[in-house]
Length: 436
Ligand code: CA
Image (cartoon, rainbow, N blue to C red; front, side):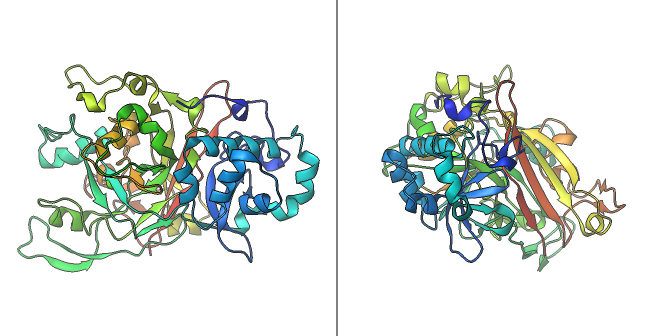
């Protein structure tokens, strides 16, 4: 697993003043993304405080050497797939050199500060893009509380299917409709039929929902026919983000019998634009919570002692909505839930190992969704389907509005933060999207 090194040093501060004590992007984070500065085209960058550090510009200025230079070349284009394909070695070398360049006590401070005007861009003046050209998007179902809440409606006594504790269940979702934060999502039309209706109808989705999920960015792939063993799975994960798997519940409910989600999910998904690297997340690894007494032990291809010991993450998650009514009154987004990635029943390495166990080949830039991450109680439910009990129970907002599902103009906003004593807290930046 990834080592703790000087880039995690809690004493390290940046000469980019806004980075110090920044809730998302202090110098200990250094996530990778693709951005366009004002008047410029897309290129790789690193978030630092309220600014973005231009990797292409830094490369052209000759600021990198060795493996880091190789990684910066791979990150200089319009998508980070080449960087993701390089694996951890060059990526870590680049992280170390970027950290040294931006450090307040860095040896190159004078040199880089002179270039700062060209290499640093105010984030609020830049456009963020998808960090990678996403080849495939697989959405798992690893949040056990969400799985149980969904299944309870089908069978209150046996909410989990018999395979759930053996198989990290997933479906192949749609990569073409994944967009970065702040690109609006159009309310889909679809075919639906409620149980009390005689015939299906086609029209605007009436039960539009969000799903709070972890995004897993895949790095180096595997050869078709050659599974990734669980002990090597972490080497294939570049980093994490947040994904909103927008869901048309009425469409999903009617169409999913028996093959699962299709048009109920494929009209759009929103991802946060920054890849929080495995390196940045190293201090926040924790043991996978022990399975409840009586649950089966995973089959051997899904079991690894080291993965169980440090393969989970302690990432605090929050979901908010911002409505027209809240906006009009100048009120902040309403927090709908708070949960944690330790609520996942499977580790990310188990997802990678299972995905490839039949020989399926992953490729750099593939995206996994973890599945909705709900906490065990209502204040942790990561979708409106669960919070509203399928529309039966409304949430009242500070504006006086009520919500069961999303209305046009509503924004879903997800945030994630990692805290640990002795380390500087980091954030993921927002996953944000509006329904129009
Ligand atoms: Ca989902």
